[in-house]
Length: 484
Image (tube, rainbow, N blue to C red; front, side, top):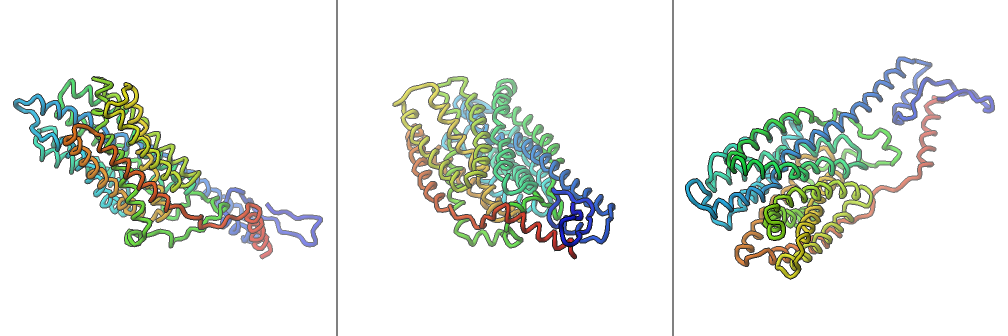
């Protein structure tokens, strides 16, 4: 607040209440008022309180998105369903699954591909109609898909029900969770918020794995699918009610001017614009490699652990879920500190090393009952980093206006990587009798990905400005308004 200063040569007018936390534009407006008008000050205070309420609303959206992903994360429990299908094929008899063993992963691979393709359409729906409607469409699709496969053992019905319908529903549900959450928070928290929301997807197996194991033992595979379908519709639609985009004109951090942000409306890139940049294709390739290698491990986690853990192998699915979720949060926080590109390089190099280290464990050269569960957990930790890094890349590089569709297009790399590498891994397993070749090929691809990620490092576009200089600029603007 300005007051008269006896030591100065001229008097400065007394100005009404000015809150230090107000943005500069609010303070200038208040200073330009003629005389004391406390009603204006009250209005300004009310507007700032509204801003604080909006920030709290953002955390509600984050929690709702996390809850939705906790349901949709059943995709990562496929290895348990896969085991039940394999047992049915081996047992034979009336009502048993009669699939070719090399195609046993096809519903999962198809779901991953459909998930990624649906993200593009879902992103457009999310940008146009909002996350709430998008989420409910997804929940109904997932439930319908599971209800379809609960009635049949047909290969094509499972491709349609789990692979297409449920995969598309997961894409719509997933697209409704992360984009709105990121829009409520400033760039400095992008990695953290993305990590928290997508952690729900990775953490889902902690409860779904033991739940699925119980239901399979008590009711069989198909009846269990029916129960899961009903549950997903209820959970996703409930949490969807709490999703929303920020209101028009919302500023995530009114005090962010102190960080001298130089972003403008022109930074918001459209899908057509991002497809004309080399950086998009570099990111797409890195995402393809990182996600495909991780999903190859996730899709076969139970089989990899069965040799060392026996009937308790299903626990590795729950254990790796903790690593999956932790990787998303840790990578988000770390990338906020050291940069997305640096974090991505470290992640891909570490994942490649783990793939090569796993080979002697897989082929029996090194025998330790804890080795494979630990390796799988760390691999899935690394895989999880992809799901917080790439949405953060999308927001940083291309803005929030078209975020839903932009990230949906980038996310296609996840689906193509899953479909290609998971399918190839299963074919190599059937041909060679093990996963050695699959892990060696994935390790080599990850090294290539790390080299590509290194090209993403760029110098910061913003020129740092000292805090003192910024405060001096503030003082000059305030003084001018006071004199006027």
